[in-house]
Image 1 (tube, rainbow, N blue to C red):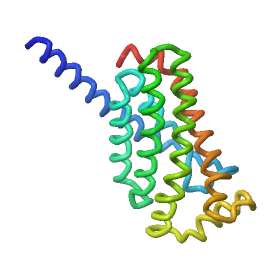
Image 2: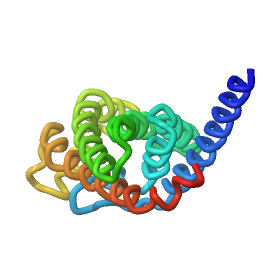
Image 3: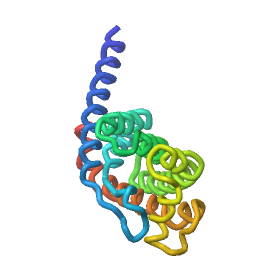
Image 4: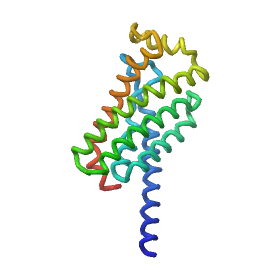
Length: 198
């Protein structure tokens, strides 16, 4: 009986932490900046994956994914992408968090965290290219901006971008590598300082 009560207490505390970290992730989305040398202006760099990575490392992969969900549900209230951006952010960010934290969970060490982050970045970037090519960009083009205009934004950055495929290789790929690396580095630097509170 006492074990059940204790387990429920831990789960409740973890859900409260998910809410707090999700809100922090949502706020971090406001502190975004375009990477205008590699990506169109609607793709912006922020640190909103850091709270989800911290949650995944401290409490497990499912909690990291829940933080991603809370962050994106909150962001839907101010969306300018018809929810497409939030959908993309959720699936790509959740892949990053799941892969990184599942690797870390098997052997909780700095080396394991670093390996998890690197493999997570590669998994996230691969999924980002596939999902953007087959689902997100076509959906965005249908709801918001014609595909020709989207590709034109890429061409303005890099003249070699003249098709959706080239956009994936020359813009989406480097953007996600940069974004994942920066979020991973910040997580790597702050995790030891905040894990005692989680």
